[in-house]
Length: 457
Image (cartoon, helix red, strand yellow):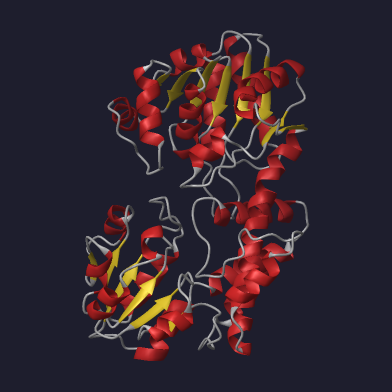
C-alpha cells in the first residue's frame, strides 16, 4: 500500500518506519529541510531504541523516503497520515495550526481519492475542521474529488514506541466511511495477525479516547503520589501498599509507582487539553484539576528533603544527580522533573554533577550560560564528593550499582531516591542514609495550598 506521512517528528517518524517495515511504500514529508537532510543521511532527530536501524533498513530497501516535496508526497499516498505537532496553547487547548496547515497541503496537491488520517493527538471535532480545510483548498482549485477523514490516535510510549506500533494492544480507527475503513483495516492487518485488536468507532469517540487514556494514566500516578504523602505521615511504606493494591486484578500494577511527578510530551499537554474541552462545554473537570495540582506538588519533595537535611542555603554543597529525561528510554526533557529540581538547587547556591545516558545534550542547551551545573560521563563521577545523591529517572543502569564504590565516592553516604529504586533496609545495612518517596519518613514542608487550590479549581 502507498502511504504518505506528513511530519517527521516522533509520531510521524515511528509511524513511517513501522509501516514501511511491513512492505508498504512510505514517503515521509516534512517542511524542515534540515531535518529531512539529516534523515536522508541516516541521522535520527530523536532517541528511540531501534528506530535508527528500522529507518536505515527500509530506506536501503527504498520502501521509506524523506522529502520536502509536498506535491510528490501527497500524490504518492492513497492513505495520508497527519502526524504533526499539537503544542499546548496558553489557555491549555491544543494548537491545531500545524494540523490544519497539513490538511490544506493535502487539499492543495491531491488529484485522486485520499484517506486523510489524523494521527496527531487532536481534540474532539478536529476531523471536521480537517475536512473543511481540505474542502476549502479543493474549492479554490475548482476541483471536486472524493476523500475521507478518519481518526487513528497513536498510543506510543517513548522508549518502547517500535514495539507498541508493531505489537499494538489496540488500534482505534474512527471512521464513518466504508471504503476508508476497509483500507485502514487492510493497512493494519499485518500488525494484528495473532489477534484482531482493531476497534472501529465513530470519529469523535476515537478523538476523545486518546485524551481519556492519558488522563487516566496521569490520574493513577497522581493518586499514588498523594497516597505516598499519606504513607509518610502515617509511617507506612508506599511500595508495600503498591504491591497490595496492584495484586487486585481490577486495579492491576501499571502506573502505580510513586515518585517525583510525571512529565513528558503527552500527559501534561493532554490533561490540560481535556480540561479545556470540559470548560468549553461548561463542564469543569475537577478530578483532572486535582491530578494536575498533585503533580505540581510532587515536584517539591526532593528539594524539601535536601533543605530539611542541609538547610535552605546550599552554598558549598555539591549534589550528584542520576537521570535527567522525564522517563527512561528517551532523551525527552519536556516538563521533566529534573529541570525543576536543578533550577531550585541552583537558586539556593548548590552545585550539581549530573549524569543521564542520553539526555545531557538537551540539559546543556537548556541551562546554557548558567554556573553550577556539570554534566559528567558516568554515574560514579556524578556522585564523586557529593553531599548527597539524588535519583530522578529510573534508568536500568541505576538499579544495581556498585554500592561500595558509590558509598566511597560520596562525601556523605546520603541517597535521596525520587523513584524508590532501592530497599530502605538493605540501603541502611550497607551504611547509607536513604530516603525515598512514601517510605515511612515524614515529608517536611509541602506545597503551598493556594497554588494547589488554584490549579484544582
